[in-house]
Image 1 (tube, rainbow, N blue to C red):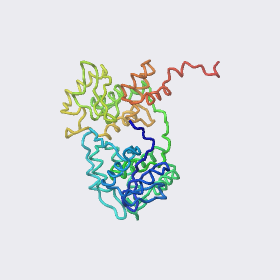
Image 2: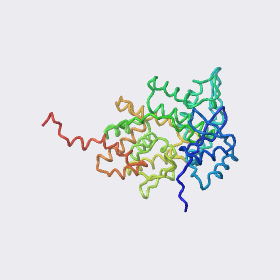
Image 3: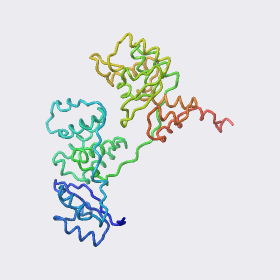
Image 4: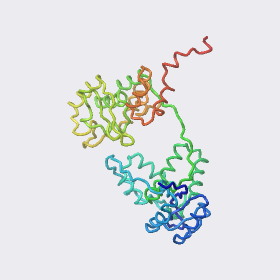
Length: 376
């Protein structure tokens, strides 16, 4: 088999509101000669590469022209279109918003693609709000006219406003979603620099605080919700997606389906909680979801948050308590009790052990064994 040492990388470019195919390569006489045989090749000073019109005919011609001469790298050009298995998300209320003069709204194509890709509702809200902030910064320009320079200037303005790294990354994701997914130009913004993700330690409650919050819930349903978040280490969305059939009392496990990154997993079912769940089922008689709203639909995210906040306040805990702190506390308490990190990783559904290892920094059992030098 003949070894091909030359290679060309295809890139998505937007020039004069037209989609173009960028051809990036190291200087080579053979490649340059073949490039000249392509239809109307031009040089872009802005992107530092040759480009031709983005058509299927031209794309086929590139592969034909360089077959056996140079390897054509398409990793930045083609992208697998993965459809998520989450339930259909209703974002019609964005379409029904009362319009305000001189405000630019997210394009309909953006909403359609979010629905098609079945992004989680919180992701949809973040992307829409972030993208609308961006396009209203340049309200006098067509969206497709905006270049990487305008995007960098916008991101720089966020830095000057002391926005967090997480906020800036969300802004980048919302912008990339439009140009790369909606406009089907994957990896177009290959040169946009991202800020480093801030590594914050998880906030953890003590076992006594958790028990006190559970005991200060208003009713059996609320008690089961708080207990499940803690005893199974669930994300709030995972709790709300639980169905009655997901509770496996024979194996004492809970099946979590279509969790983050569309992964299924099993987590622990508490024996004490199972008793409460059986009483709750007899009293509330849910039909499909374990926790349902008044009309039999999924319980709301805000309701779960309000339960946690009110119960914590009644328990005399005045620091800000969130549903996710229950999950952090679950992992930390398991680690403090000697559970292997690898098992905790499986129970939490983490892809990387590095994500789980952060709990070692907040577990107190090892720290308490260290003698403070002042006390020596």
